[in-house]
Image 1 (cartoon, helix red, strand yellow):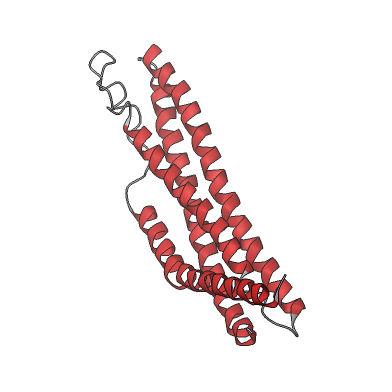
Image 2 (spheres, helix red, strand yellow):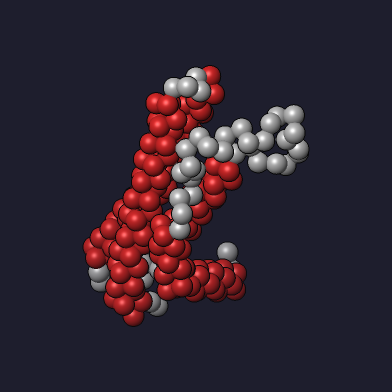
Length: 206
């Protein structure tokens, strides 16, 4: 490798690292507050899952259902939650990549830098695990709900099945709301730790 090529590669890497640094700053100082606000908004609106129990089930008969029509309002709400979960996973993965370019620029404090990495990545992993847990919980919820709805249709006079659907809806929304609250708190911790780390690490950048 010639000296010229070596300098070109170094300049390319430094330019790429600087772009990642800017993206990380954007993600932290703008992205995290936006996520916290969005999660708080989701907890304040009416439940994303069905909370009306069995009342609207089979409102559209199979014969009258057209292509693209919703089988159940819960289906669209399920997709909305899944989109939120997917977004959280993408955020955590992107944050890990960006932090690798922003927390290792200190020559005389590697132990501190390592502790910063471990602390932040632990929070990121916890956030990702929470998002995955929501996705798994949603799939189990709809499977259980389908079984109960089938029982409601087959045994229309048995009120207990309908009450069970309402209870299942309420419990699932409570779980999702609680998890969203935990995620918003995780974002708060991440914001505090990352910005505090940058005040120490970035002055040592070459």
